[in-house]
Image: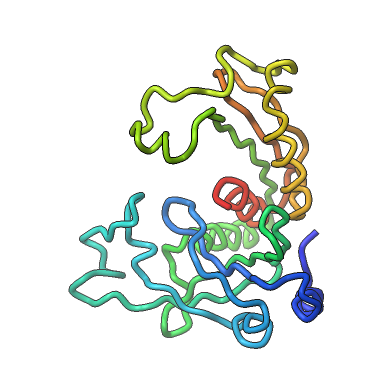
Amino acid sequence: MNLKFEELKRDVASGAIDTVIACMVDMQGRLVGKRFQGDFFVKHGYLETHACNYLLANDIEMEPVAGYTCSSWEAGYGDFVLKPDLSTLRRIPWLEATALVICDVFDQCQQPVAHSPRQILQEQLRRLNERGMAACFASELEFYLFDESYEDISMKKYRDLLTSGTYSQDYHILSTSRQESVMRRIRNGLHGAGIAIECSKGEWGPGQGEINVRYADPLVMADQHTLISRA
């Protein structure tokens, strides 16, 4: 269940929440943004904030890419306006005393930024609605678990990694029981964040897992998918 703004204000006043993450989705599907002090967010930050426009013109290593008219060294790196969509506000159980909200991206003239991933989807949904149709999406996220730290994996340059499991574990209950200390926390954490998790299961490869999410409105599902994969 998402968090109502009035509930957030009460939780901030009581100290149950002291941090609000306000973020947008970049070109790689990552969540990027800021952490607000809760008291400031409920008084001011919920209206809008700002972020550098290179966030929609960079590569996977966060390096600015040449050739964009929207953002460049020649034009100077200005700011987007980020407006929190309060319908996406939710508690984040795996982060202490923290809530998160996803923002829509506008330019300095208060016009939606057309190449923002969330705006692209919203435009497609408007076109669908004009034709008297609606859609529902569902996500199936697959990933690998490794018995190595982030630092060790980076030092190895992501080669010859030690997977959590040594054989195909597609639907395999014994193998996935060995990973349940992780998978159970994922299921329960996402459920606590208001995401309708149906199930988890093993997938074909050694260490490969899968999370399945109940179908929903496409924009809601896209927000949930990004949150699952990037938060």
